[in-house]
Structure formats: structure tokens, C-alpha cells
Picture 1 (cartoon, one colour):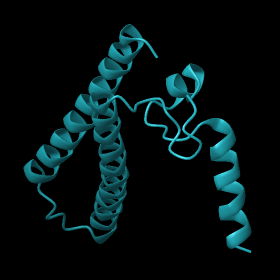
Picture 2 (cartoon, one colour):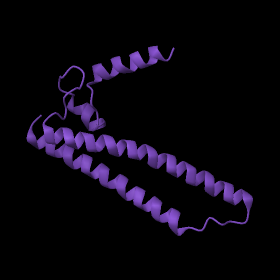
Picture 3 (cartoon, helix red, strand yellow):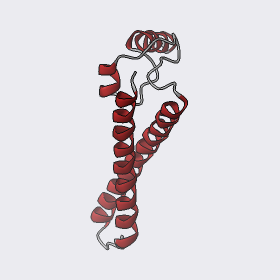
Length: 120
């Protein structure tokens, strides 16, 4: 992968990271600004359900943020775009679709098949 492509992915990853951080800050702001002292039990249950969903979503985003940071570290170390399993290049189309990918499509398919077989 050439330096121009690496820079393109770095910008994409940094943009994804900024968006997640912004969403988290907005969630924190909304949760601290709103009064959840609603007298109606149904409204309170709805608010708690929404809050729980939002927190689960932010938890998933935290996992993605960790993967983004690892991808940026791989760019810095010169290993970005290299499959962790077979050490071949990960296709550009795959990285465009999933910039945090650590496996080429063939190795990812094999990994998912192994995981499915373990679950049986």
C-alpha cells in the first residue's frame, strides 16, 4: 500500500474516531442535563429503556474506538493492511468497507467458519 492510500485510511479512521467521541460527549451531556424524575411510571420506564439502549450502543462504539486506535497504530508501525493470519495484503476494497479489518477476506471466512463449528 502506498503512502497516499495510507494517508487516506488515516483520515478516514480519524474521522470515524472524531464522530464516535462527539456522539459520546453528546450522550453524556444529554444524560446529565435531563431530569429523569418523571412522576409517570410508564414514562420513567421508557426513559430508562432508552437510556439503557443508548449505553449499550456507546459500549459497542467503545469497542469500535479501540479497533480504530489499533488500526492507527498499525498505520504508524507499517503493518496496516497486512493480514494478521496469512501476512498477505488485505484488499483495498475490504479496507474501504471495513477500515479496521485485521484479516483478509479468505482468512476472515475461515475464522468465522471455525467459530461456527465451535458453537455447535
